Every structure is written in structure tokens, then in C-alpha cells.
Image (cartoon, rainbow, N blue to C red; front, side):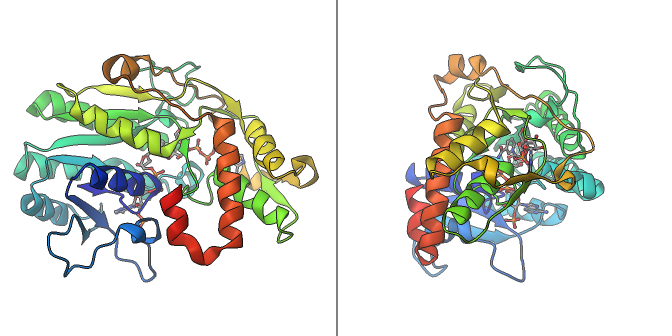
Length: 332
Ligand code: NAP
Ligand code: G4F
């Protein structure tokens, strides 16, 4: 079962698990517009016999629905990915973020405790929890969150550990550093940059407004990170793992690589707009993935600059052929 199946990671994880032969159940929110674009290519008609992807309406604010679903599905593995996942937005909506990114983890852990204790549980923890703690950050680095989102994720991290210790649940935290892809939400900085680069290349836009260009991040490729999630749940014991490339790049580096890959000069198009600055910034996140590499042999393969080029190319292709979206998702 995957919460957040319609998000970037949920879509790649669903693909990965279906490919392995799993029956996948996904929680989706009812919306007045379609919100399943990232998984439309996986959709199976409800009338199909022996279907492997089953979608259920539900919201992380609804504890009774979560309990009923778990009682019915009895999943072997639960990947809890649903969250209000945008750091800047969490300053505007701190209470909502606390509810959906923090408290909702208690709702699903309680549901497991009550009706599905055998289910292995994966919590989508975040490098944002390290916040102001200097890099390289690893499993023993003290948390110092710098946003309502980071604070909510720290809460969820500790709830996951507490349920593991209190009830013997197989509950694991994956502390993932930033990971991106052509499916990344359009308001995260990497996708905002690559979409704008493609749009500028085609003459559809001339300016790109950004905030802090000096932040350092450890950007990896999302499909590789969902494999790490699965590996963590195949371990003999539940634990907590950092997942990262170990290599740093600035927003400026990412900008340069994206624009140059389309033969563009970013300095001609980018302007700083203070509305994109955060009340408190996380200056540098660079992870040390030694523990997961030792436990599972997982390592990141794609570098931030390769990713910038891949995403810029994909956005150019998408803007040129919007109607081939289905084919596009398959290929990236
Ligand atoms: P994403 O693209 O923003 O996807 C978030 C998912 O959560 C979407 O499916 C969204 O549904 C769902 N969701 C939000 N609020 C919900 C609610 N109230 N009830 C049910 N579902 C709800 O995020 P992502 O990048 O795939 O990240 C997946 C998880 O990993 C998140 O928990 C994120 O915080 C965490 N994480 C991400 C990264 C990263 O770099 N990507 C790094 C560390 C941790 P809709 O499609 O309907 O909006
Ligand atoms: O792409 P971002 O919004 O990602 P951020 O804040 O690092 O959060 C992402 O990674 C976390 C893992 O560490 C996840 F947990 C979280 O869910 C999310 O996926 O911003 C990256 C950096 C920041 O320093 C930001 O200040 O880019 C800087 N930035 C500069 N201009 C901008 C912009 N960020 C955004 N979103 N938009 C801008 O215009």
C-alpha cells in the first residue's frame, strides 16, 4: 500500500513494485480535477480481472478511513509517502502541514497497531530535519529543523521510532535527501528551472524569477531512491537510513547545467525575487549514505548535473509534444 501514490515518488514506487509482481494499493484524494496524471499510464480498469493496481479514495486527515482500509487490505508493506511536501508553503500553512505531514503519521501508525500489526511500515523522513546542522549529515546527526515542514517530519520520525520500540512494529525511517526527476512538482526549484529553460528555448518565456541561488543541496534521481525504500523494507530488522548521493551542488550549478544543456545563458534570463526567499533557510544539505550502502549495497548513480540535463531535455520534449504525456512518463 502506498499513501501519496499520485506524487513523484509514489508513481515511481508503484511502477517499481508492479514490475516486481506486487499487487499495489494506492490512496488517492478526491479532487474536483484529475490528480492522477503521474499514474495514468499504470491505470487498470476496475472491471479488469486480477488487476494489480487498486486505487482507494482517502485522505490522511481521516483516521477512520485509514483504519477501515488497512483492515480490508491487510498490506504486507506500507509506504507512507503522503505529505504537504513543499517547504516554502509550510511557512504559509504551518497548521495544515503539521496535521498532514506530522500528525497523519500517528493516524496511520495507530491504524496499523489496531488492525494490521504484521504490516511493515516505511516513513518518508527527510534531510530537511537536519536543517541548520552542518554537513555531511548522517543517521547520528542531531536534528535542527528550520521550517514547519522540517519540524513536522521530525515528529513523524520519532513517532515511527516510538512505535517500533513500544509495539515491536517493523517501522523504518528513510531519511532521503532531495531527489528529482521529470515528474517533480513544478514549484520545486529543479523543475522550475528546467521547465523555464525549455520554455525560454522555445521562445515562450523570457524571465525566470528565483530566490536564494547559493543553497547547497545533494540532488539524486527519484527512481533510484524508490528502490532504496523497497530495500529498506527487505532488511531483517527495521532501522533508520540516510539515502543520498554524498555530492553537493548549488542552485546556481543546477541552473548553469540546465541552461547550458539547451545552449542558453542563464545570466540573461534569471532575476531574484525576494518572495521566493524563506523566513529561515537551510543553507547546506549533503548526506553520508555509508550506512545504507553497507547494509544493502545501494548507491546513487545519477549526479545532480546529469539530472539537470535529463530534466531539461524532458521538459523540452514535453513542451514540444504535450499530447504524448503518457509515452513521456514511461520513458523517464
Ligand atoms: P509530492 O510529489 O509532493 O507528493 C505528495 C503526495 O502526497 C501526493 O500524492 C499528494 O496527493 C499526497 N497528499 C498530500 N496531502 C494529502 C492528504 N491530506 N491526504 C492524502 N494524500 C495527500 O512528494 P514527493 O516528492 O513524491 O515525496 C514523497 C514523500 O517523501 C513526501 O512525504 C515528502 O515529504 C518526502 N520527501 C521527499 C523528498 C524529495 O526530495 N522528493 C525528500 C525527502 C522526503 P495529491 O497528488 O492529491 O496532491
Ligand atoms: O526545491 P526546493 O523547494 O526543495 P527543498 O526546500 O530542499 O525541499 C525538498 O527537499 C526536501 C529534502 O531535503 C524534502 F523533504 C522536501 O519535501 C522537498 O522535496 O528548494 C531547494 C532550494 C532551497 O534552498 C530554496 O530556497 O532552492 C532554493 N530556491 C531558490 N529559488 C528555490 C527557489 N526554491 C523554490 N522552490 N523556488 C524558488 O524559486
